Amino acid sequence: MRIVGYESGGSVHVGARDGDDLIPLGPVEEFWTDPRAAVAAAGSITQRVPVHSLQLAPPVTPSARVLCVGLNYREHVAEGPFEVPDHPTIFGRWTTSLTVGGTPVAAPVDEQGLDWEAEVLVAVAEPISVADPAEAAKAVFGYAAFNDITARRAQKLTTQWTIGKNADGSGPMSDLVTADEVGELGSRAVVCRVNGEVVQSSTTDMMIFSVGDILSFVSRTFTLRPGDLVATGTPSGVGYARTPPRFLQPGDEVEVSVEGIASVRTPIAERSVVR
Image (cartoon, rainbow, N blue to C red; front, side, top):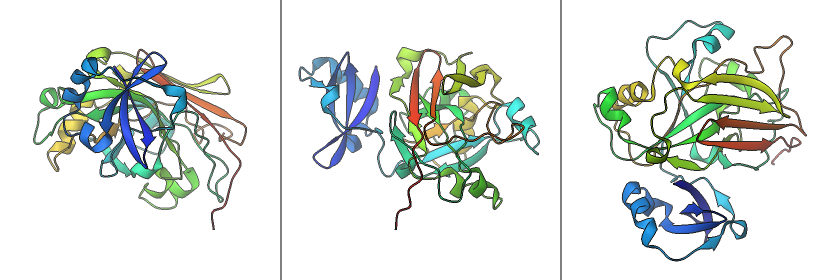
């Protein structure tokens, strides 16, 4: 099942796609109290709403943790001055940086442009605490295509990556596809295209740390909760590592796709300064 969020009455609600329509599943906070039960109940709901009539939004609660993994593909590690990590390299995003496909994003004023990072995003279905990788993997609710769009200048100003990873609107995600529909993640193509040109291409079996590994690692420090999101890292081919470096510019269009899951497309807009 494909899960999306949408604006309704000043708040975000969750729905399941049914062709060109949406099955309403309730407010986002209620949905994530038991997302599997909410999905199971969808078959008994007769109401349908045309998708084109809705303002889509990420199906994410404001309190959700958005964790990202850096350096999780060996070839990407080799692009920079890094060594293969012994443990997952975790950094955070705020939910306010997340957007849906088709939402324009602009580079911050001091950046040469924006960089792309194609990733698989994982959503948690149930609490995960001190779990081994196999147990943690069973708690996955679903997967999405994600672009961890990065402001590289800001990212590299300090040893902490937070500011460069939270530019306005810089976290576009696709629909969430439930784990029962996806099945084993296995070896799925992760591809990024800029204006139709392939700039990243790898497979999920090339990850250094699996989804279960990552969730297990985090769960030994704090409990993951339903609705928390984890972006699992990007393969090689990012813009800053090219010769010369290449960055997304106004008028470009970047698309991330994950084989058998979904894709998300993002247009790059002119810079704007909010005062």
